Length: 314
Image: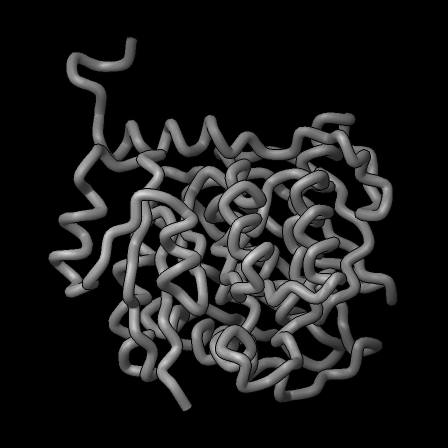
């Protein structure tokens, strides 16, 4: 089979550099890069291409569609996700959506509509299918054995916190129906998620003084389990899962798209619950016009952390 050619779109985070060698090991070619300048200064795409041996730098999304068989969208301004994805969807090119998939119900709905109409879309967080999560799932503990659990991580509430939501969906399976803000302690938000079969788990995400690992403590009727992921294996696990679908080796997505974006919808419901005084929010009831998480503001803060403004913030 002809080696599939990959185009990278927006080089904002560490993910593009981390993915390139793994994709090459898997037999794919990374042939072009495009950077929209959300985080990095002019010329960054050219230096990235030189450093990682990528033969072409694109100066428009249309250029990427002409070079690549698969597009990887890595931008940290998730409000640009549908804008970046649209040219590839229209060209029939499969798209990997980095986490968070999107930050508002409107954009999630647009992506879901494209997927329902046949677009090849997948991505999200690797925590859903980490080796540790799969090992726990392999124990096949019946749902009626479930008691309760706690999972979480640090850094920020959505861009990084979405990993915790993905992790618990991986552990308990899809079927999250509601979220309820419980409290805010030490810079973190505590949220209780509820599944359709009644199982519940608490998530704690947000900023802390130091780094915290991705973790989960799980209680069943007969024992307790503690999970801490090995971050060095996450990207490889994710790419092993998504590439057969993106490359056309299988027609079956690794997870149906409506279940993939359940993760982001749970986080949006949690935020809305906090804004409404802790009211339980059903995922199905999130208003389509709810603003969700501000991707542009996050991207600005991400850029300023990487390239502090000269003389401090204005």
